[in-house]
Length: 185
Image (cartoon, rainbow, N blue to C red; front, side, top):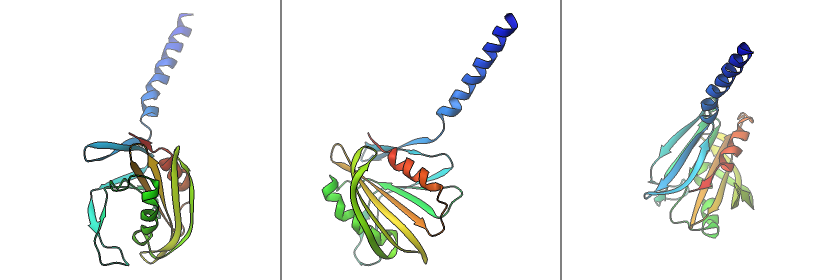
């Protein structure tokens, strides 16, 4: 009986030693603006997160500078044809404010773009508006989307996705998981 109880204790210790590894899968990241935590998102294992600060850029179809909010750029480590960007422009206070903004981003996601659809839906439990389209990026055909999620307290999250022709479709489950993991802070 003593040998059996030692075996149970060893098995229990073995299971408990696995728990920290399970808890560490994926990574929670918080997007902050002006000292305020706006939202958090889960970055899947084997994805790279690149954080860019605020800046001004010139869209391809315009000469005027346009302010761009801080961006979280995510891509799978092994797949170059998939990119996800997340940002929360402070000037956008709700879904209605952000619909035109989402459509205007197509020129920054690709060149010679065509909007192929727009739709209202729910993402991560928040009201959302999604713009989808096609275009060319670095000479290659792409499909893109800009999803705007309305958060509480007068903020939105803009989720951008660019998929190059020939991308690994298995990455789509991670893209959807990223968007579904967004939580207001």
